[in-house]
Length: 289
Image (cartoon, rainbow, N blue to C red; front, side):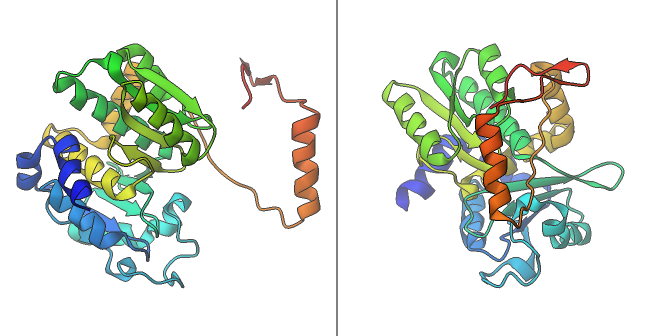
C-alpha cells in the first residue's frame, strides 16, 4: 500500500501545482463498484481537486440498479447518470471505472452539446503519448522506453513507438500475456511506459503489473488539466495525434448468439475454412488476426 500511494505520484505525477490550482471540474462514477474511495485517494496523491461523484453509483451494489449492464464500455446507456451529473456541475469530462475498478472509460462534452465516448484504443494512444512526453522531458532516452499492447488493439501506439524510437511489443489478448511481456522487457532494462488492451484496460508505469483503472484515472485527469490549461480539449488533442502519427480506425462490438451449436459452427468455419474477405470497398485487406 505504501509503495502504491507513495511511489505512483513520484513516477507518474508531473504537474502537482497545476493540478491543485486547476478549475477543471471532473465527474467520476464507480459504476456501483469499489473504485470511489481508491480513485479519490489517487486524485489526492496527484494533488488533483476532488471529482464530482455520481452519488447513485458511488457505493458497491451487486444488483447494479441504475444500469442494464454495469460496464462503461457499453457507452451512453451506462453513462447517462454521469452525463446528467456533468451537466449539473458544468463539467466537460467524465471518468468511469468498471465495478472492480481495473478499467477506465472516458467521455468528453463536444462543442455541439453531444458527448464523445473515447474508445479503449483512443484512450490508450492518449495515455501512451502523454507518458512518452513526460519520460522524455525527464531526460529518458526513447530507445529504453517501451509500449506493450494486445494483438487486437489499435496499431496507432505502434506507429507512435516507431516514429519516436521506442520499442513496441504485441501479445495475445489478456493481461496475463501483456504483463508477462512487460516483465520480460523490464528484465531487459526497458521502462514500459504503458501496457494496454482495447477493452479499456491500462497499466501506466512500472510499479504494478496489471491493468489499473484507479491509477489510469489520475494520470488521464492530470493530462486533461494540462490540455485545458493550454486551451485544448482532449478531442482536439486526439485529432492532433492523428495528424502526427496517422489515422487509425477501430470498432469494437459483440453479437449475442443464443444457440451454442451455432456458435461452434461459426468458429469452426472461421478456423477451418479461412475464406476471409480480401477487400473492403476499394481497400485491400493485408491481415486478419
